[in-house]
Image (tube, rainbow, N blue to C red; front, side, top):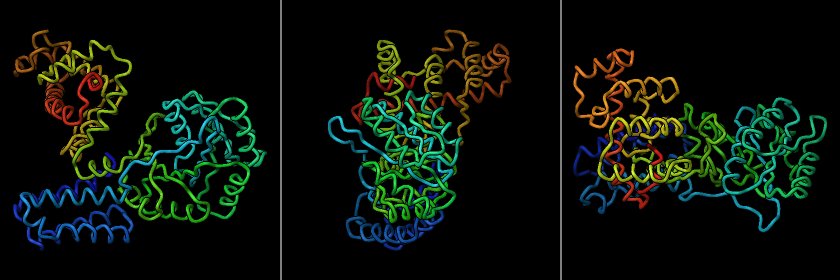
Length: 451
């Protein structure tokens, strides 16, 4: 999970608070001091941290909290609410021009931020919303960028408009707009050139494009792994050309959290999407409340449900209904696990899913779940080496049966034991699901796609 280090540190602070029962004002101040250090180490902007701690302190150090039934939980609730406010409180979605007008988005950012890939990902995300996008290749300084956009455009089924490297970007953008109008596209996404650093030529070029094409929204792509530098870049772009929103790229990498927690507070501009993987469908809307929940170890059940519902589109309805019924009864056996592994692999693996469950986020990276094809086949071999009775009744497992299964699958007994441990983790997760689905009002066929 992105922001894992920050999440782990904050959860340690809250664990210490819970262990105290009633809290004194000094307890709260000491806890907030640790929260402050955790945020600074995560590369959150110093001024943002100071304001955040002051806001939390004003609310947490008071009679209502101190005399509450569960004061530690109250403090955590306040931190959660203030963190949501810091990142924007509510999701901000892209807006579109009315009717049949072409909506133009201009993508910008520094070289290496993942802008060209994010451009194709955005087109793919909008395609799922029924939008027909045209991509304009305006990075004339890197022929490889044009080729990359064409390859990615083909992968997501989106046309790319290009005029080579000898035409001004503003001319290409205007020609692309005319092409979009004539051919029934309702969205034009302009991929502009990046630079190793911000310079006047770069800014002038972006202004020139804006002068020739009626850009509806300017979207900045920033590398989440650069932490505070990403915030500085966002601030400078906003001051010089004006931006309407941010896409955070590479959030699946070694991300400390500074960018996500600082961008909105420093620039006043919202994070629109987070890009979290190499695949072109690895982009999702940025939900401040869900991100805060995950950072604080409270899980992200709604995102988990949405992933399940999306994966459910290709499943058999009757089979899915049967699985949902079994889960409601708390049943989950090796046959179910085998099917779940296939779906989990498509959704980022068991670790990715468990990071969305309350209280399990910081443990997700410790779970040995290689959801690749090779591991899946080994898992299948282990399950298929069981008798039908063993598959449907996990409680039958004992050392003698495990040795027989290991021999049948051609694997070491240690691998069977490791698989059993993974199964137990999954079983615990499944037992939580009926209550979670009922709580969020979404239990039913959609969630069965996990399995």
